[in-house]
Image (cartoon, rainbow, N blue to C red; front, side, top):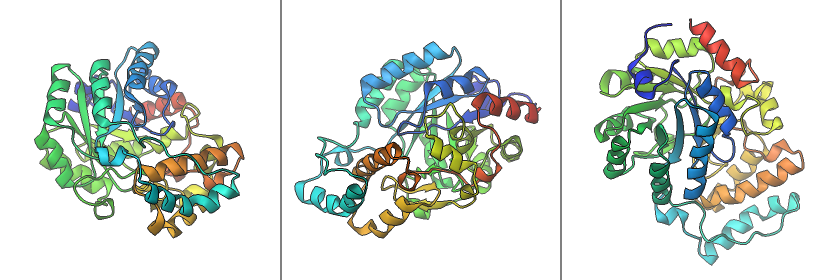
Length: 353
């Protein structure tokens, strides 16, 4: 393997391999620790956790690994997104979801006081917990937050879906830039323009960001094996982030139906959809995507839509119905081979050498 890159040195990792963070219960301490202990950077998506849960999470990760790890948050969470819907808006959303809830035997839910933890509270907790790495998507934290991360020696990784976003992160002074192409599974974390207008491919974005930005670049999107990692390293990236490949492993927090779908012909087709949460994401088409796409005009925005969908997914999982699950997947899924994170890391490292 080539000499350690600037990205590896800043993150304190042996291999240029980063496990993508998954929200909504898909991340686990076991997965993150397995990757970190193997010399990569394990990550945990914490955007749905309250502050005290983030503090406990950091303690659990430190107990599981002595090596660097990342905690990931969604940066764009203004109070208008976390606040409760007014009665009329909630009722309109309920009418859109009611037939699907009834089909799965669910009653009308009581509205929550808010739909998402406050980002400010999460950041305060993260700074207190002081993880080795803070990665974030959907925007740029305030300058004071980034300055405090530097003071506490917390490395920062900001996600970009376009060259303009990479340059914005560069100007803000983040430590590393994640160039995430539209091939990636999961959410498209655009923040300067609508996600549908920010669909740059991984190779083009990685090369442009590496050429124009002053910060080390990490590439993501459609990368599932050592050949993909080698390709983006040749384009100037200092490391690669793999999401779907680790999501398919037994150590992740997803369900068996999702894992089996990732290793099936179903994974040969993916779509960009707002069905899962109200924000654009890539996954495998199923009835959930079909039904909610047809109802798009009547659905609430993020995060309320994700709250309604989460109850559908829980009921579908209990009833062993994959047609109402969120089947996140990147375009590299047809290349998946490994079902354990330990085996995947061993293969990646061996093949890179």
